[in-house]
Image (cartoon, rainbow, N blue to C red; front, top):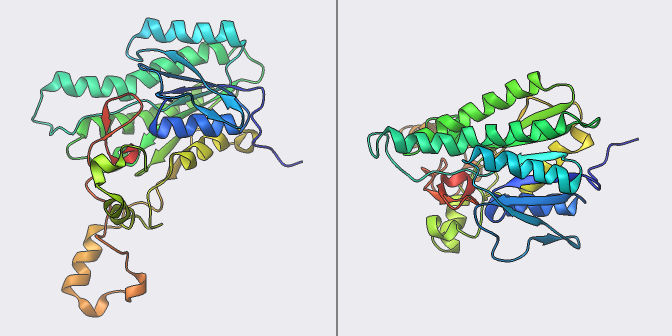
Amino acid sequence: MAASTDLSGNVAVVTGGTRGVGAGITRALLHAGAQVVACARRPPEEPLEAAGRTARFLPVDLRDTEAVHALFARIRREHGRLDVLVNNAGGTPFRQLAEGGAARHARVVELNLLAPLTASLAAYEVMRHQKSGGAVVMVGSVSGTRPSPGTAAYGAAKAGLENLARTMAVEWAPRIRVNTLILGMVRTELSHLHYGDEDGVAAVGRTVPLGRLAEPEEIGDACVFLASARAAYISGASLHVHGGGERPAFLDAATVNNPSDAPPPAARPHGRAGAPDEPAGADTSRTSRRGDHS
């Protein structure tokens, strides 16, 4: 019998799950039948609903270790179980390495690497006692897989997050699966702040091989898959959800300098080739993040 993406009866926590990519993940999990707890520092502007279900909101500062462990203890007490944790919250302002000092960069690492570690450890204390175990999904970024000028600490933290997930997948197997989503640019309610009007958003989208930015719900669908029985033998993996990635800049230089070697017009991407130097964007943690969640 084919495995199902029905998550009925499952309890899921989405950090930073109140807007942007996090809201898309929350709604996708609701569509799949899960009970969803969205946690962030501030409540959503309107209830998060899908398929006749509404997500529960619980406030938490993910940098506060005691508060995080208290949150998961409360979820265990009031919901009786925890099946899925999505570590989505994170962010960074755009700042060159030489600006701001080490302490500010350290806070970026704290939010994007140490906070997911804290939440995962708290979730582990619940999941490890369950016969069914559980699934942890880290929300990573293409910034962790290539140079990230202007957001170096963020990129380094995301690279560390992916490695952390792989180690968790080994240490916590076979009961708990841990995987990472590697995101590119996603269209959210804040995209206009970084890309301008609809023409600007479309122009940026054309730099992606698939020709557009991702929608938050598409990231949510990937989370539902990794949380479901369809991914029962997937752990320690990194799933790239970036529309094909970034077109290498050298290809355009080669096209300009060697016209005879240029691909036919139909094969060329529209607009500027290569993904933009992703401007700072804001995510559900209310701090700004590189363009993968903008």
